[in-house]
Length: 371
Image: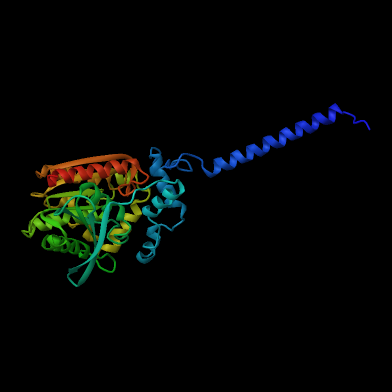
């Protein structure tokens, strides 16, 4: 039997085979690209940059974009109890670490809990002790952010841990009481009493009582500054140094940065007004110098490092605070980080400027501690 060769049919078969093969390998290639679109550790946002910050850094926008993707209701529309359930920048960073396969080294610190007696009860603190170096260690009393209403020591764990590791100091992160359950000035009094407790007890957990500083972010930066002021006014040993990261320092919500970044995220103008309403007994207290520390007596305070974010309603008041402190004779060093938002400091796992800011803060503490 003869096999007849049909050139036309064979050509069609060959073409079909090649087409199917090409489609197969194309699909495999696309599948692999979708699974691993870029090198591990490279963080990129999904969408276009926002109108309120067209020059925001890619990594910072990826964090904020991830935070917005959770679909939480805006804080000003919630009760304080509901707002405390919202996702945080920490959540966004952790999800990006997983999403982009970022290797994050384990913190070289040990942690323990301490209960600190304060007027009307006790507050909890977390003590971070470096795994390297030798005792006695310098001590940093750290106050977390959250507008005196939300957040806690867990949310700001990355900042406290980074300071302990990079400075080579014990960090005591203070879980002060918050409004509206505990109105002004409860958080401020808790902060100062925690500082006094550290002065009296640091030696019991390997701390050097002659080298104690304070630090805080946002509302915590306000508390740290107030601790120095309260120590001066009470004839208590002053902190050796204070670190104020985008501190709440003024009640003026019409400043240049409040106007430019009124709708910024994660902190906007309506949220700040909500914080004031929920912590203060009445809105007239915004002019109290414990809140508007730009109007406080700033003489005789310790050397101060101020770290500010460009895309932040609090940028102007942080800058003004630095100017007022310098005018009062305080030694001030400061840096403004462009392209980043409020809450960037603890996002060092994905935001390069956060790594730089932490290193800068650590170097200033080391100078103050003579390390």
